[in-house]
Length: 143
Image (cartoon, rainbow, N blue to C red):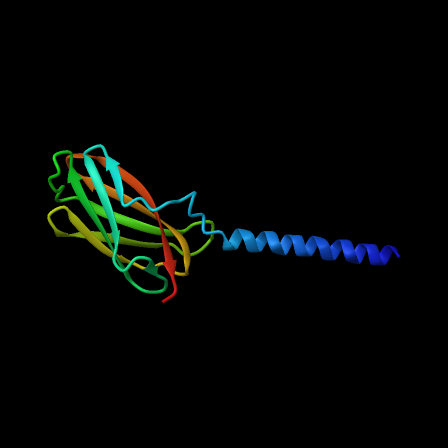
């Protein structure tokens, strides 16, 4: 009788634990980490784009950042670096530089290593102002 109760209690606990793990992994955290295409910076704004959004997991995706000053003019000659981290996972990071493709527009290629919610940390360095750090979230899917 005691053995049966122990077995039933253990089975219930394992089922509840598996359900909680499933819910945590399945959650996309979309309300906690929304994608913000436009972000204010002290000098103006940064506009984020990902070609063919949502991003494709295990493929190179083009990330584009447009920098504009308070008058709407492009911010040129900046140095941008981005690091991709999967939200809520201990997964490999992907870091890359963005180069200026046209005045105030910076592009680089990054690869999310699996499908799910990712965070992009952007560092903007420019000789005329202090270093700026921004973050944004995005979704990656398998193609």
